[in-house]
Image: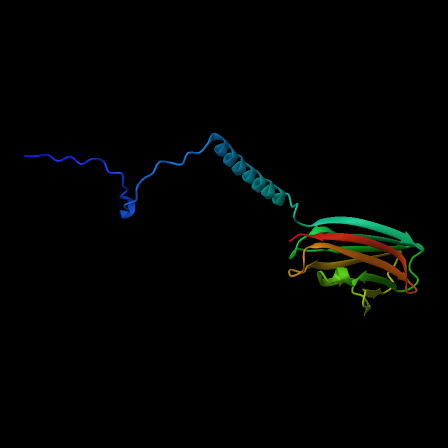
Length: 188
């Protein structure tokens, strides 16, 4: 009786293949360290992005600006940063020494309003006028010496991200009595 012994083969039969197995690539320690460093850096950046998101860094941040002139004090609370699809509320507060003597007229730049989807204005303006540069709202004479206007809006989802400049003015006889300028940065 003869016994036949087979020598080990250098072919792989995994998944029916007959490929030859080769030796692993020679990788230097320097290349291993570089790859490990890149993996760690990417993980740290991903972690930082998640932490900033959890802290609402990419969300809505509000700021205030104010101006005064001709007996008017104007204060505007506006979104300093935001992103499409989230609220972008504006609060406009106007004070006048010794109260208002008639309707109050407020102007807001169209360039800024174009990036917003305005839902409501409270109180509702009694009259609205549009020019090529601004929306002009006229409000009935408020009781006392303060008028507070709330503009409920959100950033349009199809607008381009970037910096948007706005201007709000209190008009007295058609001319700005007090005016503020502000800038909002819209994230993608």
